[in-house]
Amino acid sequence: MNTTDPADALPEVLAAYIAAVNAFDLDAIMATFSDDALVNDVRREFVGPASIRAWAGREIVGDKVTMAVTEVAHHGALTVVRARYDGEYDKTNLPDELILTSYLTVADGRITSLIIVHNEPAPY
Image (cartoon, rainbow, N blue to C red; front, top):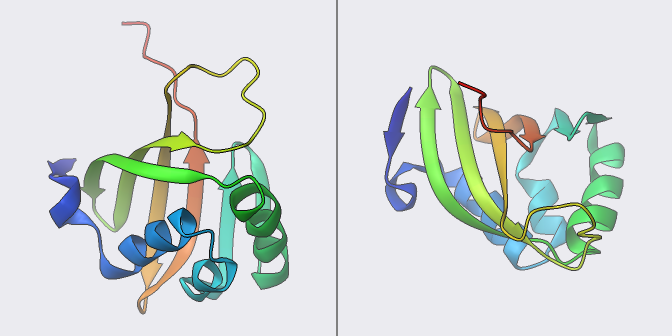
């Protein structure tokens, strides 16, 4: 996996997605997704514009989620983005510094899949 400086490594649409999240702009968030996109947010699946809009409206914009990118890596067609998340969501049982990993694919300038995972350190 090729890891690079976060400022230089984001494809344009992914930079636009993160900017839209941080601006709490639901329409701009939706503009970054393809019509047949899939989002899996911590093992919950949302497919298509209506489902993704409902998720983003409630859990991203509604909870005032922000992302501060800490690392970007490329693995073939997959872009891996690690970011520090904050917001007004329920933080019960979450670490003080919540780092989530997003696995994204892009086609024709739009996000086709976004998988968000709270990774645990490997035991070895």
